[in-house]
Length: 191
View 1 (cartoon, rainbow, N blue to C red):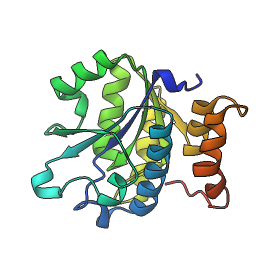
View 2 (cartoon, rainbow, N blue to C red):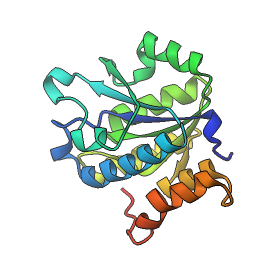
View 3 (spheres, one colour):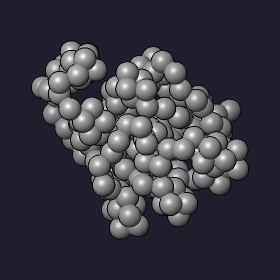
């Protein structure tokens, strides 16, 4: 039930520049995803992003990309990226079994991707403050539906400390200075 960074992959769904202005809580979702993405980079947890119809909705928001070092982008036509054979095969080949999921819109592409991951046997961790929709009620219902199907609702802090696992390492000290300490004063708002 606990996340292990060696088994984890952070999947960010459709944080696209053309979509974010109409998303309720979109700025906070990007902030949370950016923060966790930066920490994932430090801990060598792979970060994958998806883009739905980028010709129309634009690419991934630049403010998110700025926080990431190494990442992989997948373009998709299905609402669930698990319906894209190349993605599904690459995920299976990665050996990662724990997927931390966030993005927009929570009740469409994020939820359908999450349900597809669950159907395929992955452990799914729904990043509660990192999944948003045009209407907040739909984001809440998406999380509830995913959790009813077997997902686990988590916060970015939960994920961070489970990935870090202990406090007596140089990695923890670096993460504390760079990510944890500056974050401690920020309020958390769930969709």
